[in-house]
Length: 383
Image 1: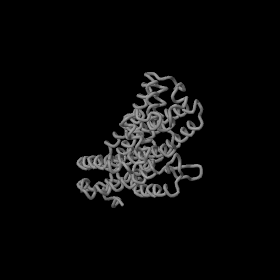
Image 2: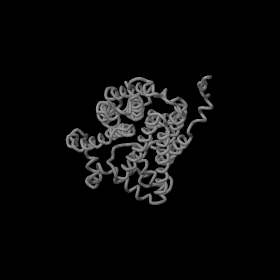
Image 3: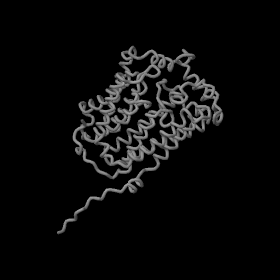
Image 4: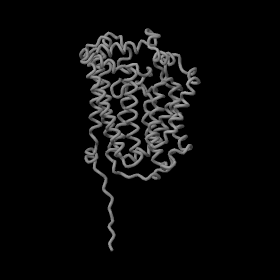
């Protein structure tokens, strides 16, 4: 009786890999980044400098990065997940030592004329590291206290470093992203409920360690009228701009709150408010629909993945986008406290743009190679 020997499939050529790319993600990312370029053009009063041109160039470079990353098999990125996490963690340690101070915070590392914000990189690095951890860990051990403590340490350590910069918003997003990956990995809901109770219980203990401006932001969120010209100024002007936009908006370059500089941080944290004032409710909902389509596409790729690493990678990046969008838009509407979270691919910021494009590239890699099988023990232990 003859035995059929299956020969391994030859590696795909570069054009073949290029054709395997899930083009929905790049198209949606380009559309959202184009909205950001137009918004920054308007923010500068109809000029491409200082923000719109740089944003467009970064988006173009980010698109090239996304496609290049997407053509590399996920197992290659899994090998690099832990070194990537450790390198970013070391960069976070270096920030308070040699970092550049801007606007009263030390969050950036300077390399000549280029600045890097390691906290933005950590969002993707943490997702990749946790995805690799759960790829290695047997499913039966996912909810064991010891194996829950290890990923929690990997989450809390960078979050604590970011909180000391200080950057409360990014620290909370890092924690939320890590917990989202743990939830997607199958950790029992009991741990999340216990964590919520502990967070509420220790709220009074944490309060004295918050910076003065952080305490004012939280108090203003609870009572927006307590300091309308101080801590409440941002959200008050944001609500005025949102309301004045109406259904159809005041027209491109026609916003009064933004063009007359009443709206603060209009090129970063409050760029959605500036857009909503000019393009109105319809334009704002259209942008949110683009985000919803992008996030849905990420989770669909996660559901189609055959192994743990690509599934958690796609789901984790989807959580990053969902958290950023919901917190930023909720913040400018006064639904959540002002914590300084940018709007993905729209707000001005080089590190955020390239990091998110890199994250989307990792998901492209998972989608293009979704038929690959990877053993849990193929790469050894998490560390």
